[in-house]
Image (tube, rainbow over all chains, first blue to last red; front, side, top):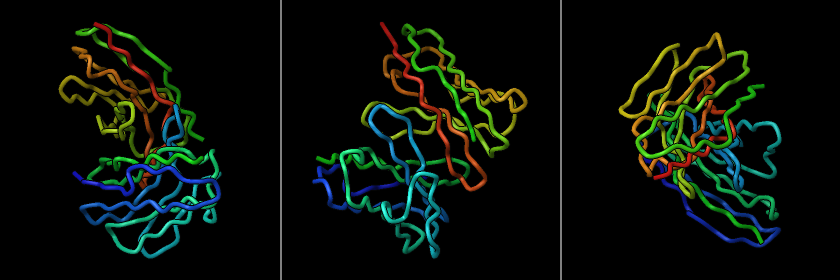
Length: 112
Length: 109
């Protein structure tokens, strides 16, 4: 199995600011995934982060709004830029290992 | 696209069995996942189907029929702690997951 940690676990931010979320895995993985879960909704994939290349974004998500870094095989960051109240969500990172998908504990973001 | 449909909510009594259906329309996928998510927590992995048929893991079983575009998650001997949202997700060959809206299961005494 994989143990995934995220920082911060939660934050309250002002409109117009940016927040960077960190994701650390205890195993080396090729791809890491970032998901968003808006209140009362299911999970939606934001992007796939590969080490050594640019992240691949899903429809409706762009790099300027959600820049991603992947400096090595165990770590990734997601930045939520120029935040608005609509960005209030839980952000989760995920990895695949041995045909199982593991999720981090999530970062609960509230934008005022 | 991968329209993934699940019932919104199901209610069952403690000790009973509940079956959560998931139907989808897609041109192809690697595997189908089921997750459990308690309120305020991250999803936890329950089961994974690649081939048609039944996968059993203790009180939880999952079934897949690719030709029918259909899966279900079976929860037996329901316990109060099973009250949660259950998510059906399709994974592509890269591991990307697309989820249904989730089914809220309410277990009553």
